[in-house]
Length: 275
Image (tube, rainbow, N blue to C red; front, side, top):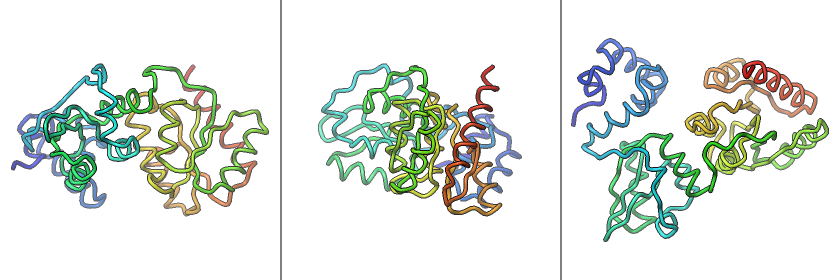
């Protein structure tokens, strides 16, 4: 099997020098090469999908959001599993199930899919955007392209902390939605399109970083500003959060006045960018 980097260089999508820089960066960050190259802005999701398909000799699929999928097919995969693992059932025939995936290196997920469904899994490469759109439409029944609502989403596994934030923001006239883990938060982000999301960094099922990554991967939610709430409040933690893409960083313990002021500040910033 050819290395992904060699395939991308041969296709003239990146230079050998860019590959060397990406490999050096990969050592420190412990991420897949494809993700590093995407973050560097030198390849697109579509180009990465094509290269991975060529590397593994898999088929690819595009624009399947317009296809119809039976409820019987969708029921083969729990929605939480589909969202967390970024997989989508495409077609079932005999003892085989074709599944859209983004990461062919993730053998563990392929094995889990086989155990859950009882079928032999046929992986088909797609992009995060395509799979998230299909999940949004078919599992969450979300209308693609619907405009955002004027709400704030709080994603926090501590009921006490979530309530403090909800009460503080409600007193200022904000409509507040609450989710108690990352996956529940992602579902609400897609279906409700809030103006701002405040998320804890450490949560069950999907942490704050995973939630932000999923939100940014979906064009429907990519522009929603996300504020991190965390008990890890060092300068290094703050820098890491801001570099990752969070618009702001609020340390715990929660102070209602600080929450309100930061939310208002983010609202002002986003309104300026929209003008």
